[in-house]
Length: 421
Image 1 (cartoon, rainbow, N blue to C red):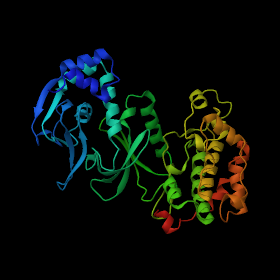
Image 2 (cartoon, rainbow, N blue to C red; image 1 turned 135 degrees about the vertical axis):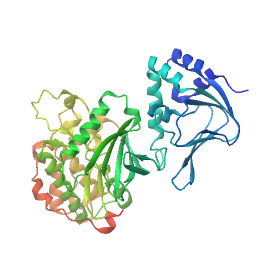
Image 3 (cartoon, rainbow, N blue to C red; image 1 turned 180 degrees about the vertical axis):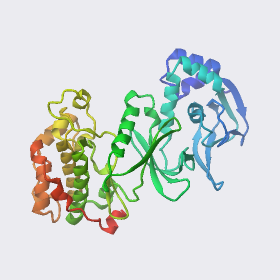
Image 4 (cartoon, rainbow, N blue to C red; image 1 turned 45 degrees about the vertical axis):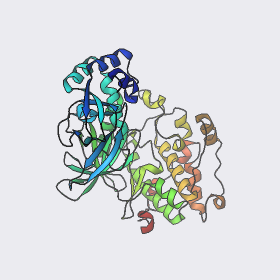
């Protein structure tokens, strides 16, 4: 005998954080539905039917592409939920849901869900988190093969804390784009939308060959999308993982490209704030593109007392942050230059400059840092590159203020085998 609606709600991990009164109200609205093996419960491209919780058996989530090929994305069993995407986004179902054997499920209709969610918004929030967990888990997910706005989504190419990135093509042409989707987990976070819009505003104000270009911003699927220039190479984190230490000639080229990008940014009063290998992309043409401006902000003077958030919030990736940033100093060009030093160190040596088990240990290591001799850093590291690293990794921000225009002259196309890593 299948469990009751209340027991299925209790068994559902996605709903576990709801207060008990809300879970009781939810269970009260559920209606038992039974399906035979092979029954199509939800149909891709058709309107949603509400929320379903599996009580017995399994359902298969199946994606159909434009050629009619079918791909199973997941199997859902006891306590798992389906139907939430179309329910929350008001979009057609993104995949078929088919009974894989006899299935008992509990169903909450659209009107009943909306009535309950109006009184208890936390119900919508937990389901939005579920969407955020599911999208981007695999190269092909619920958005694979869909056309949003003017873009046809092909596959997921990356997923981070704030966004999922898809490779897509313009529906009326062949130009590839990178669609950066704000994670549904952040839809209800007050600052997330502003940060996403700020990233769009920053990118629209820039125009440089070493900075990924923003084509446009649009809203779809109950979240925000940025249609970005598509980089057809790898990020530097992948390059280092695959190749280890790079020849100095290639390190110098990358340093030149990044110096040019930072010169452009800092000249416009903008600090990137999260320069790291995974935020630097290569292209097949041997170019370097600085990406991910989600934390970019206006540079702050040390005596700027208005930007209290910038002074108090630890935003960025600690391993690549300057000592003063880790201690709460406001963002400044010198902090980007420190991050540049960390990236170049990693490229030249094949290993990170710092490894720590706690923030306090990391701060201490950065204050006590002594750059190894050139011969101990990497094969063939010259005194010019060593001197640059020494200045960039200095604990004194003033020492880091190197002439970026001088180093931008190092920029040349990367070796073909490196660009295609």
